Image (cartoon, rainbow, N blue to C red; front, side, top):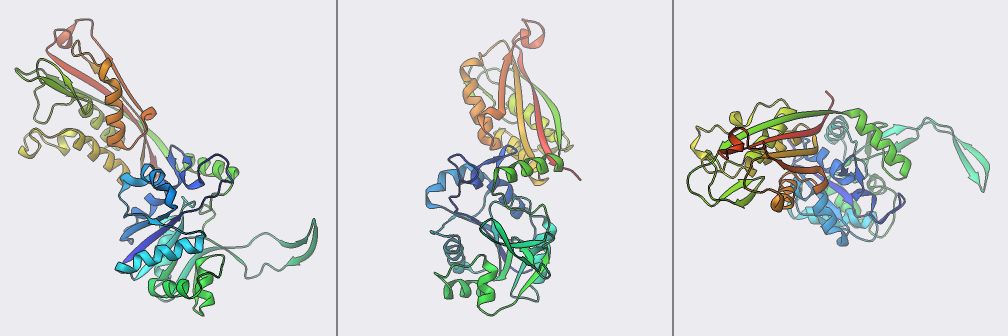
Amino acid sequence: MSKTIALIVAAGRGHRLGGSLPKQYLPLAGQTVLRHTVRRFLAHPGIKAVRVVIHPDDRDLYNQAVGDLGPDEPIAGGATRQDSVRLGLEALSKDAPELVLIQDAARPFTAPATIDAVLAALQDHPGAIPALAVADTLKRAEGAQIAATVPRDGLYRAQTPQGFRFADILAAHRALAGRELTDDASLLEAAGQTVALVPGTEENFKITTAEDMMRAETLLGAAFETRSASGFDVHRFAEGGDHVMLCGVPVPHDSGLEGHSDADVGLHALTDALLGCIAAGDIGQHFPPTDPQWKGASSDRFLAHAAGLVAAKGGRIVHVDVTLICERPKIGPHREAMTARIAQILGLSADQVSVKATTTEKLGFTGRREGIAAQAMATVELPRT
């Protein structure tokens, strides 16, 4: 298979949607527009790597949006989109791919089949783009009046990703630097090379206006189903020790908790809740307590694994909730740190994580201070199959 890199262009400063953030960093169904786009390309088996071209001032926004997904180091863009693409291509030239797909960051609904079609067309053509035939009657205006009706035969609306043989598109960008053209295919055309058309989709629109954002929210709601599941875990206190691990935070206590790993009941319950959302069994199936490699293991590894399985299915975690049940230690002083730690592990914001505590009014094993219990709930959204 050809070595293919996706170059996602996210260096624009447009604020037509309002607010202080560029549109690629605006929230869309709980995640940024850029994150939705990057995930689509990271998940495609025909793409070896993903690089994002960003504005030099947006590094913190980029890290918050997609840093945890693991795309390669971002590339600083230029003053115009054409400059940004050229700089991105130059950065890729150090380890040049055979093919490159150039994608608008604000197109979060590119279908895998569209990517497949572009890659297939590149076997016979130096360039290929998805496009839709123009269906509406076109008018040329002078002021507020119609000057002429434009024949629509043979007219198409260009979309991305626009795919190219890397050497050809880099040469075209170098040769035409400073000459502003409307898209990357235009540069290849100006260089005298052919560009193939493959079928685009109406869903592969570019978010530009507030109405586009509303349409995107509607599409995501229709494309995903919501699932919730619970988890429960118990560990008894052990002799000795000076702390317990709860929700990823060491909490001082006069004894530890027994367990093959670090016995973090909060993270164990939450791991099971996430696994339940995707019907992937329980924590014991993924990390058997009989396996010596998990002895003393930090439970954040278990939770991150479950979150990775959700992501691999194209899902997103909407909200998680953990309730710790014990008489001692006191949870309140550590709740904020626990919330922050879970949010960090799962790549969520703090308002998507809830940590609570209760007692059993001195009833049962927790009331007798023999151990700690935890129950958890998780809500995820998964693509409809």
